[in-house]
Amino acid sequence: MSLDDEQRDIYAWQIDVPDFGEAGQERLASTSILVSRVGGLGSVVALELAAAGVGKLVLAHGGNTKPSDLNRQLLQTYDHLGKPRIESIAARLHDLNPRLEIVAEPANASTENVDRLVEQTDLVVDCAPLFEERFALNDACVRQNKVLVEAAMFELQAQLTTIRPGVTPCLRCLYPETPPAWKRRFPVFGAVSATVGSIAAMEAIKVAARFGEPLFGTMLRFDLRDVSFHRAAIQKRADCEVCGA
Amino acid sequence: MQVTFEFLAQLRTLAGTANESRDVDASTTVQQAVLDLARERGGDFAKLVLDATGERLHPSMLLFVGDQQVVWDEPGPLHDRARVVLAPPIAGG
Ligand SMILES: [Zn+2]
Image (cartoon, rainbow over the protein chains, first blue to last red):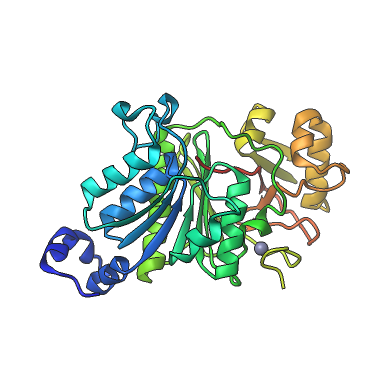
């Protein structure tokens, strides 16, 4: 897909990135990405991907906008309270990028819909709050051999890794069973979810445009309380039920 | 020798501190150091760190020494001033 003059104009500042260039922009324009849950994390992922000129976003998010969304779900607005979140998400992304193709799924990812959602895309960004959803996405990405960017947060802390099935550890290598201690509601600031979301979006852009060094087999963790960042190598589990031999 | 444990996320809340330095024998493995720490702290801290047998790391807990993840059944040597990180599972939203 070659760029037209308007696209060259809009994306001029990032086309100047030396190992990205016009070829990278063309790759983004022909890429389809699933962002599963478009809440605190996913709203920023989707916004950055829309701004970067990704061709198509498949967005999965159920429910109506609540007051407690507004500290971090940056595609929701006060005047949208009580209305379906996915409508505000799609409208605000189209305000930014009217060429963006959006498939809006008004439901969260589950074992029922996940294969259909992943099938439509080249890669996936996991922004789900529940491990059941995360495992459904991970398992579908392994089945369909799609890269999965994993982003997670708690309080002022966060962690990210990028999974390439068959090469890196998968999510079930890290967490073989549903963690009993994880609670749906957890403490967090919007500035934390936005930081994690921006890094996750950059991971997706690098994978889609094939440049840079994504976090393959590496976990990045950071703590904005003292602004410390660490990288660590993570391991495949030989007996992983999902990606093991 | 001295090792420093770092507690992340919910474990930090339960521990009431971000880290704890301890003196251990030079031959101590990371597995033994984690068991000793969890058993001494006990309660909800031990419940999050150890599995139901109390003999192994909980399968949902990630363990790192420095910049390497340590899998429970593989050798886990420690060195003086090692940083041992215990990371409970977190998600998004
Ligand atoms: Zn695996």
